[in-house]
Every structure is written in structure tokens, then in C-alpha cells.
Length: 256
Image (cartoon, rainbow, N blue to C red; front, side, top):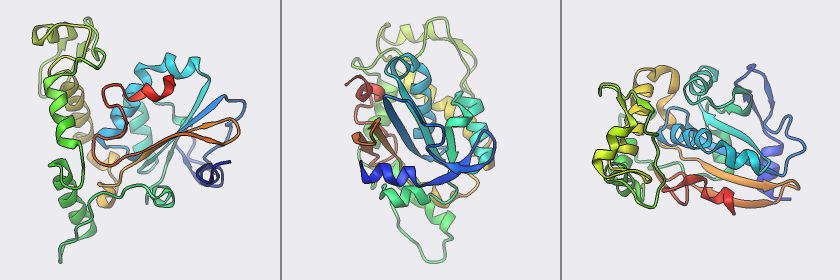
């Protein structure tokens, strides 16, 4: 049994569905595989995008008999808002207000420069801005660019008939992206539009998603176990927009 699994199996956190403090692995029985997602802030691009992929590719993990649990930084209100927006199940979602589980797992805390006279929250903002510019966050700028330029190795993200609402843009149909390059792959501006929609959601509900800005730079990780608690796969995020080994298709590891 993996020592990482033991950390999860002995940890308790607040469950979003009922607000109870219970073991993270409550009700995790009779599964073939167990996927545990340790997310950064629930208002982080990575958390929202990861949940979007799980919803989009639900058949992939459901057919494989995979049970999912996720722990994100925030409080119960953050979790409720996140679940409402992403459709991620509340009873699978736990919150860790102080990123204590992240620390136990040794996940990357992000850039940690400290300027004299700055509060922890102000320093976190400074470090977040630097990470968005690629400092202490390898791959972030390339990933931002990929969102605008498109990616022929990635699947199409928005269906032709789907109506997109990403303020401040007016509503439009997914077929509009065909004019940017065709169909059947990730078109230019397609991923950037999804990220714009997520950004609008978070900025419009900032205090709910981010009750404590001290942990803005904390990164997450992905852990897949067999039914004996043996670690089959792990990915530790190295920077912003680096939540998967294959960002062109983040759930690719579930196919192996």
C-alpha cells in the first residue's frame, strides 16, 4: 500500500454536500480504481478546467469503474459554488481551507517571494502575477498561447450547436469557431474562450471562491490507485495551467 494512500485514508476534511467533517475516503468501497484530485483554490483556473474535463469525458472514467474524490482549497461556500458551476458532485468534494493536505503531500507551493511590509495575501498576489508571467511556473506561457492559437493534437472542445456565454463577449454558437480553422480539433481561441468564461465566473464571485488569498499560488496533484491502495499514477503540478502531463488531453492517463 502506498504511503500516499495512507495520507488520504487517515485524513478528514469537510464534505461539501452536508458540511460534515468525515474521512476523505468515506463510502469509497467496491471500486476498480480510485482517482484522488488535490486541487488548488477552487477558484483557480486549474480546478475549474479539470472539473470541466471530468464532466466532458464522464463516460471514460465511468466505464473504467473509477471512483473520484477531490479536495480543494476553500470553505464550504466555495465548494457549493464550485459544484453548482462545474456540476461536480458535492458528495465527492472536500475542502481544505489552509492547504494542510497539500503540505502533507509535499505539493508545490508556488513562487514564495516575500516583500517587507506586504501581508501574506499581498505577497500571494505578487507571486501569482509573476507565475502567470511564467516566473516559477514552467509551461504557463506556452499553455496560455496554446489556448489562443489552437491545438491540432487536442479534441474539439465546444460543440457546433452549443451556445457560449463568456462575458464580456455576447452569446454565440460553437460553430463560429469553424471560421477560425475548421472543426474536429481544438480551434484557435476555443480554449481561451472557455478560460474567459471561468475567469468571469470567479471574478464575479471572488470572495466566495477565494475566502483566503494566502494560498493563491499553491498547486495541486493527481493520484490514481488500484483497489489495494497501490499508486498507479501521479502528477504533481509544477505551475499554473500545468495540471496534467498531457494538457492537449488531460484525461489521457485514464486510458492506460
